[in-house]
Length: 245
Image (cartoon, rainbow, N blue to C red; front, side):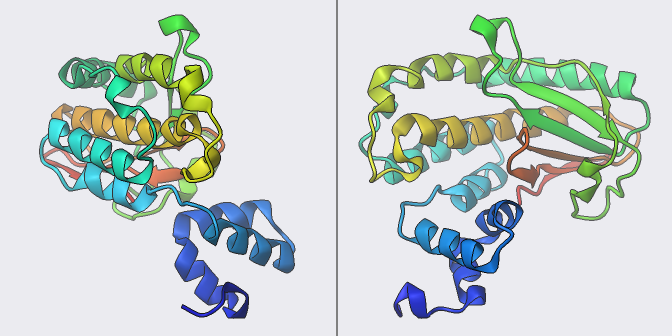
């Protein structure tokens, strides 16, 4: 591969991937600052975002998607104590998310776009939240676009995915916070706080949507509050298709 400094902006963007590029475009308005951010990013370990999205959408069973996620984590951050993570009750979390989604959609009315925002900071000893929900009728659910998220949303009640809280209790411990430049984000904690939150919530919420009775087509997106957002899937009255992109 040629020296990174000799690459064009377009080549750097291809190497960084679309999600990193979208983030840097929002943060860095000056062309040189934008280029420098991509160069710094390429010289650091990268979060396995694309592999994680593929694991969620590529498995029919939630348990298999979660197993593949943990394999990705072990490959990407081998020094982290993944064996200490508690085993989440995926089935119970899916059922609870299904019941929550069903109640929220009844309250939100005929929305077609559904925003599911991950909140890693307000779980309050298991009595708070880690997912918020909003909806709009300004979404065309047949188009793979999340631009409607920036319209005015009508919000519903928050939800706590219990398995995420239990895992967060473990990977918040000091052992996970040791600085390690061989791990993307610089520590096992920061790595897990992104990848585990994204993957487990996507698996739980996606499989909850699969069970959800609905009379119209809707397009849910999920991701971090004021951060990366991804298309979760497309739910019609007859089926649910994972998109995860």
